[in-house]
Image (spheres, rainbow, N blue to C red):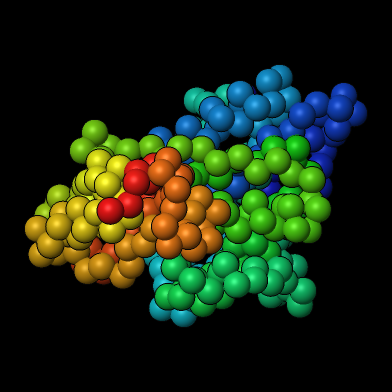
Length: 288
Ligand code: PAF
């Protein structure tokens, strides 16, 4: 049965036996509104920790929402979330209040995410990744996990958390789990629930564009981008923010990548008022 902790003390008490036994502790940080994508992260965590405890945190972190973003309308579905955790055999659910995480209001000391946070998502969401890294650092401090699992769907977030754990010597093994998709390719996201049926249809353009790029990548980066753009042109309801190919760590690709080089293609677009992101791996062939 999943045990629920709302305070730091309750959390520490529930994790006491695991610490005493030297068990491997796994953490899946979430903001709730759990869906199959989150459930898959819990399964990856379970694989990694074996018999050790899997902890899922559920916390809608105000620090990572900018003015005009959807903090208030972000779905809060604790009862249903607990059922998902129960079903996946999660040991501890940590669902603290804002005051529990930020006693005394906004923290004075925060994590500076560096230049990687200023591109892609960071460009349109200033302050977002500082808020993400600050809360993740706090969760690492509270849970003291050996392993923490994040979805590849938020690829830039995953890259930054990996970087933080390495650069600040936090000692947490940050694991990326593959994006879960609907049968028509749409990446699972808590934000999909904001889409009307027509917008839901339009939203599949993003994954179609990425799959098209994957198919053409053997002909080089430009061919991959052109294939993706051709898919995007077919759709009227998708307002593109960015479509880029980078190296897997989000650094710029060399101008002439070696055949077989691994890369990442990332896309962000608005469908109606909902901002969607997606990404996939690419294997670049000989450039022509
Ligand atoms: O990906 C999310 O749900 C959030 O950004 C995270 C990592 C739980 C931090 O609040």
